[in-house]
Length: 193
Image (cartoon, rainbow, N blue to C red):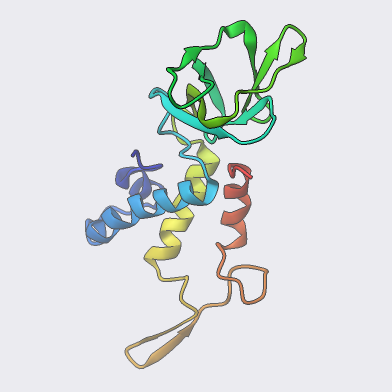
């Protein structure tokens, strides 16, 4: 999938002209991008112009299916089936509603809710979601996180040539291995809960 930032963007933002760290950064950029996507529970930019297909198994009476990607841009199609032996049928656009506050698809008939069919893979939604490009505040957090790993700031104690370096914990939570607070605040803005 697509990295949230490029090596060139990182080097420009940090004022790095030398190729000295390019090999290490070439590994860190995609690793940190994937780490951020995993933490946020959202791929953020991967499905902006590419369809995401999600299939839902409905086990109880509900009129709601919650999509995983956010923010939803367009619903391409909504399909349902009453059993696994049946083919999917397309739900007319008048029979579902996209709740943009929760990125959920609601099954409606007129002004009332209708329950989705129960069963394995009973609802399939094809949609696009995310951002055309990584938002600038998120880029800043990704740049900081790359630097955090590049400079081994995640290690509390290091020894270099007989000298010992003690890094102060970067989170306000005691004994936490979480991201530094200034990075976590930004990532939490994009996190799907």
